[in-house]
Image (cartoon, rainbow, N blue to C red):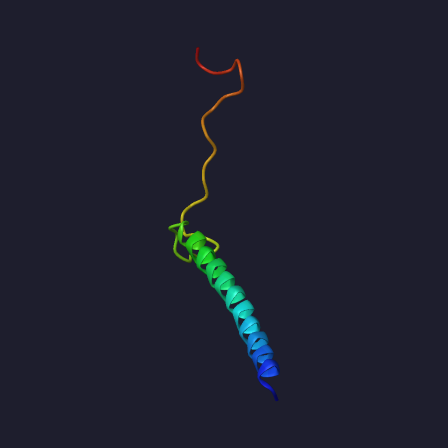
Length: 68
C-alpha cells in the first residue's frame, strides 16, 4: 500500500466517523429536548383516575331563566 492509498483510506475513515458523530450529536440533542418538554408539565406520574368525587354541574340557568 503506497502513501496515497493509505492517505485516502484514512480520509474515508475520518469522514465516516465524523458523519456518525454529527448524527450522534443530533440524536443527543433531540433526546435532551424531549426530556425538557416532558419536564415542563410539572406533573408527576399519576394514575389515570383519582379518588376525588366527579365534578358537579354548575348553577347556570338557561338564557332568560336566571335572576335579573
